[in-house]
Length: 358
Image (cartoon, rainbow, N blue to C red; front, side, top):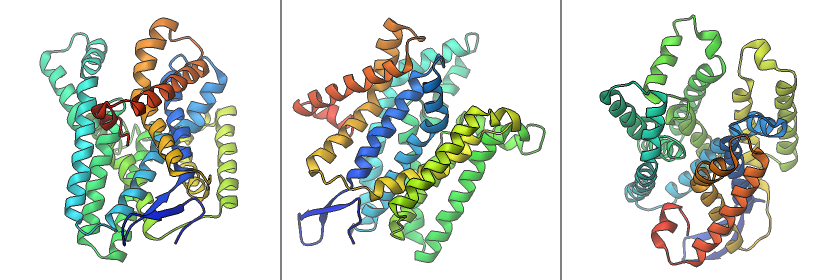
């Protein structure tokens, strides 16, 4: 069945068709730009940038997880050798993860030295161990969390029948979001309760909510279920829902509802906003060539993997932290788009591999 946002192009073999999800590829670029906003808005001195970061940027990586879950389960459901597929999938992610961890290691060590200047060598070693093997850092947490979540979903797929699969994945989604909301949204209300020890445990283990339990498994799980059940929401309905939720998020910002209720509503709203955003991307068909879709995917990957180096080592160094966030985003995205096309034209296979380019 070919949906609105999906175009069947041709067959490579008797059993496989090339499908282009042009809306998803375009929306991935938008999501990557939202990630750049997060890391550009250190000074928090622009109203527009604050609105973008607080109200909307929180959907970016969850959207990536939903897309990954959708396509992961699409491939898993259609391969003959599932074991070989998951091994190959995990190997690819492990390579990406440890490559970027190695690249980021000097920056990670420097950050810990600045944050904990009088700590012992043992503490630094433990912090780095946690950073590498448990929580990731910078862009790498996304890769590590996806690696872990994909394996969990594979195990559910392998050992349970269809109805049980759905129930277990839904259970994992509910549990993950419950932990997320308690950790990020309601943490101030829970400080004086026994549950605060659960939040402290997660802090010691991961240091933040960006982990496979709270984000990767729930959002990838939703993507898997959407593919498995072939769920669709009409474009008009998803758009109206997104608009209403966006207005609500803006109201939270304008009326400082978080401060009044001592709850982080942005985290709560990010969940349905991300789901609506994904359904819209799934329904949109740009009627573009597969090469253009591939370019959009490449641009989003390049922006995601390289933007922090442009921001932290070039723009912040020469223009300063107080420089306009919007201009830093525009400069970064423009430069990295050019970088993508230069890499695409080159024969640098290793660079294409670590940027996940084809």
